[in-house]
Length: 114
Image (cartoon, rainbow, N blue to C red; front, side):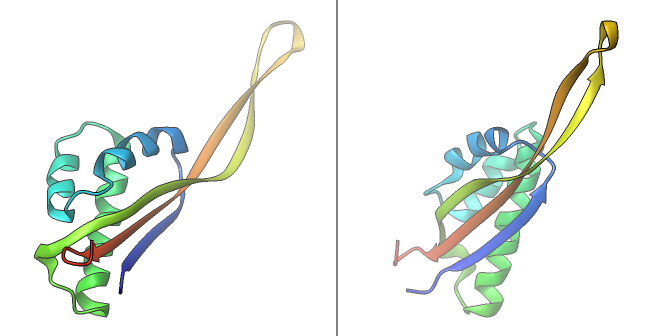
């Protein structure tokens, strides 16, 4: 069973925010997921849309799969590194700010294999 993957690393967005949308598209057809993400107002929707398009291109060019029958088999988001920043507060104190990053992975299979 051949599967096409696409991965984007070091996305400047928290994993929790992207994971919400990854849960929505998991198991759907790739074309259906792209239409669904296109009309969502989230920044994470743009990120997932790019990764799915990249996975479709990988399936088409590397594995000679039919573009119409692709289904999202896996869609997961892993935690990347965290940049620690500090916001100055009153009386010389500091308030920590965590700038999180993510790694997004999408895996596609053809429709009859799913």
